[in-house]
Structure formats: C-alpha cells, structure tokens
Image (cartoon, rainbow, N blue to C red; front, side, top):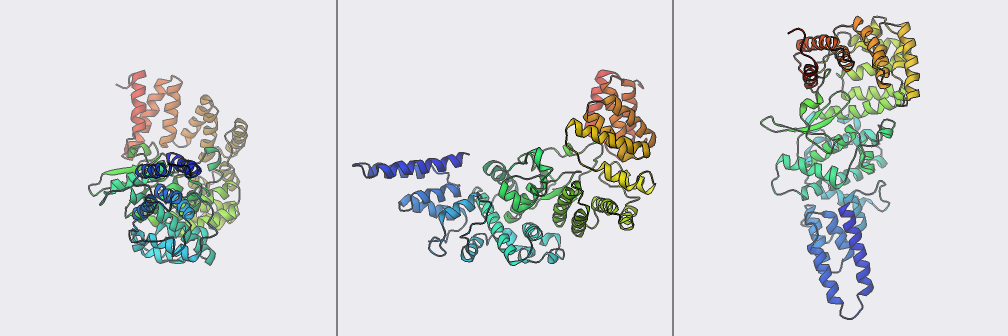
Length: 520
C-alpha cells in the first residue's frame, strides 16, 4: 500500500511540476524537488526506481534510477535496455510488480528473450528439469533434478507452442520476483535471511492471501494452480506453498514439504536439525511443530518435490468429486498416482470413485491393496475400506456420506436425515456414524451426539478419536467420572502408539482442575 501510494504521489507531483515548470524562477525548484525525491527512494526497491525513471527520464537522477533498478535486478552490465530490445518501461514496472493477470499483447519474442536473460544466474537454471518441455520427461527425473515451476506449468498449461509461450512468461515473472527478493538481501545471505526475505515479499509486499472461505472450497483448483495464484495473489495452502517452493529453488534455498492431514506447509531445516516452519496460510509464521499434531496425527509426513504435481491433481480431483463428476475425478486421481504411486490416500479415493461409476472390480482392487494398511503417521486405521470389504456398507451409502453440503442449518439437517437412513440400514458402518455425530455437534446437540458416539464405541472401542470425543462431551456435561474413564482409555490407546499429544495433556489438566482423578 505504501509503495502504491508512493507511485501515485510521484505521478501527482510530476503533474504539478509540469504545470508550473515554465513559471519564472521555478526551474531550480523543480530540480531540487527531483533530487529530494530521488534521495527518498527505497534503495532496494526495483519498482520505485523504475517508476522514478518513468516520471523523469531526462533528468540525471532519472538515469541514475534506471541504472540502479537494473543493478538491483543483478544486471549491472545493462547499459541501454530500452533501445535493444525496445522495452516499454510501463511493461517492466507491471511485470516487476506482477500487476497484470493477462499476458501483455506487446510482449514479443525479442522482449521475452530479454526478460528470460535477466534470470540466467538464478539457481534453478542448474536443474535438469529447467530444460524439459515434455510432461512425460518430468516423471523420469530424480527429485533433485525437478524444476517445480516448470513441472507444474507443463501439467497445468500443456506443452503446445502457445502453452510454452505462456509458461515462459510466467517463469520470467517468477524470475523477476526472485530477483526482487535478492535485491533486498545483503551479500552472502544465510538461508534464514532468504526465508525472511521471501516471507516479507510474498505476504507483506505483494500481500498474497488465503481466499475467502466461502469461495475457496468451490474453486480449490483455481487457488491451487501456480499461474492462478500468481495472477490473483490468492491461494490455498498448496497454491502458496508451490509458489514459495518455486521462488526458493531460484534462490538456492532447500526446503522440506510437510503434509499434515488435509494441509501442506514448507519448512527449513539447518545442518544442526533446527527447524523453521513456514505456515503459508498465516503469512509465513513459524508455528511449533506440535501444533500440527493431534489425537489422530502422531507424526508429520515429509513429501518429495516430485509428489507436488500429484498433490495438485489430488486437490483438483476433489472439486469434480464434490460435483459428482466421478469420471473426471478418476482421471485426475490417476494422474496424481503417476507422481505419488505409493500414496494410500490417492489409492483409496481413486478406488472409491471407481466404485461410484460401477467399475467395481477395479475399485475393489485398490481397497484390497489397502486392507491391512495402517499409516505410520496416524493413530487410526482408515475404516471405510474395512467396512466395505466386510459388507458393513454398500457403494451408494459410501457415496452419500461424501456428498458435500453448505454450512447452513437446513443443509446440515438434510444431510443428517440421509445419514440416519444409512445408519438404520447399516448400523455398523463407522463412516456414516461419525458423519452423523458431526452433524449433531455442528447443531450444538452434544447429548444426541453422545448417543451415537456410544454406539460407535460399542463397534470400535480402540478408536482414540471416539474415546476422546466421549471424554470431552462428558466433561462439558459435568459427567466427570465418564470424562476420566474415556480420557484414560484414550491415553492407553495412544501409549501403544507412543504418542502423547499436547491437546490430550491440556484436556487432562482442565479435568484435574474440575475434579481429582478418582482412581488415585
């Protein structure tokens, strides 16, 4: 906002100076003002120096500002870039500031070649993947060879001639973003310096944000694709994380990719093992790692950079599934599987969607592969696979529990009625029972939720989530004896997993303050 105001101020001042420059005795006044404005420029702002040159191209300070702008972009040898190739300075300002969602009409091959040359010394140029223009070739690369931006753009935009042109434009824009970040760094910056500089650039200077909750779920693919995130400055956790990774590769910064259930963020780990988490939905805040753990999540899963395109397809598939376009969802899950061949979540959701379109044999095959699987990152086993294979549910019932609804009361009640019919038909179907429990909790009806939690507990006493929910609701209802009983059950189950979550410790302390442990 300050920089936008600064640019407007320069334009306003220029208009006023132009209107009075012919008045007697004011020529020296104008020169003095120009010198003062030049001195007040942010010495590390590429945009301000380009803008200053645009306003005062004939002044000595204007020429110095242009030279400084190119120096900030690490182009010290550029003497007169506005002659060959001919670059519109407005175009340069907009590209550096990333203001245009549309590719400029006057960005011809010569100008694009020049823009690409600006980033020739960025670290991603050393990656084998930076020279690849075919999607199939990406899969042949090792993790340390992948240029993540190129891989994502090829999968998103395609490999036709027109698509390649678009990719080159977006990559040149990423280069300019990386060069702006470098301009803010001192000589020989540390990796943490780079992290802080990227955070400042993305979240404060360019103000990238999480999209409004009311629309992100309906347009999750829009806020995941790298080009869309760059254009809109809005992105879900995956969308902003992939942009962060794209910039980090250009700066030679190695980051780890972490995926708690339903989430993704990146982190930096130094040679001594010290971790700096970068929460991309909260302006890069370094949350403690245990914030991401809970009753169900006992360990954080680290992903490879090669899995990232698969995660983008995974996110996109969810949108088509929500709109009951199962065939398209299947295609996207199959694409995701190419990048994530061993991922159990991809296999399970692909299997489900195959079942939904009556490709039962294929869907069941994926379920059979997962029959005895238990994730090392979770304390619970995925029960929908077992319930289907044990004939405790059918395909239509599984399809029904995954149908999305909005958060209105009428919508929740409608889903609740549907779930009650499923539970009557399949009383041991845990997926339907848990969904039903959640609808009662959403409506603030803890007493009814507790009824179905007890039914769930009768089916599966070893589920730590069910035990924890019963303990928590009992506590809220002042039933402290049952709160202690189910808390101890939860602790016993999680002890077998060697997991002692902070949330459980906090709950235990609150319960102790209400009533002493009756077993002591």
